[in-house]
Image (cartoon, rainbow, N blue to C red; front, side, top):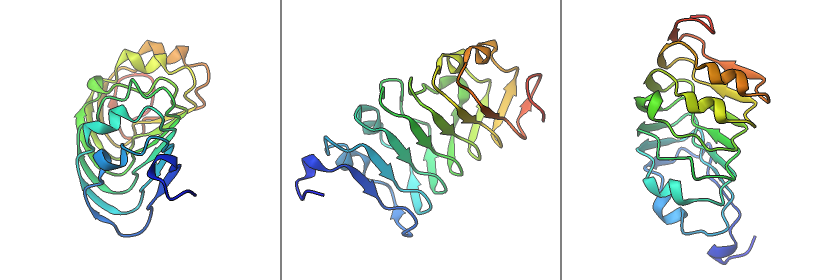
Length: 167
């Protein structure tokens, strides 16, 4: 790996007992960064909106931290394929989540999202694994989920929903 920050490929800080907020704004300046692996730490606070501008990113892993707040807009992250945010304290109306259009794996279980899932979920044509289990999701599954031809696993366990998957 080169010492130049502009040739940086991946930031791996997982399982290092890191504390505090992740410096998204600073890390977003690394123009060639394709992966952030910061799962299993003690990171706190919200994810900075600068995350929305990291259009070269392929994998984001912040699972099993203490991250709070709402998700930044993700709909412009065309290269993002893996979004691992399970087991945090992310919150907000599920209907307001904007999804990365080419995501393949997106486990968002064990957070505090609430309300109905947005119809735009059905536009994720490459998604194979999506999980909103152990959130406060209510209502019926969007019928557009039937358009997700690549979908192999949809986990909604322990959500308070009507029709589509078990409570």
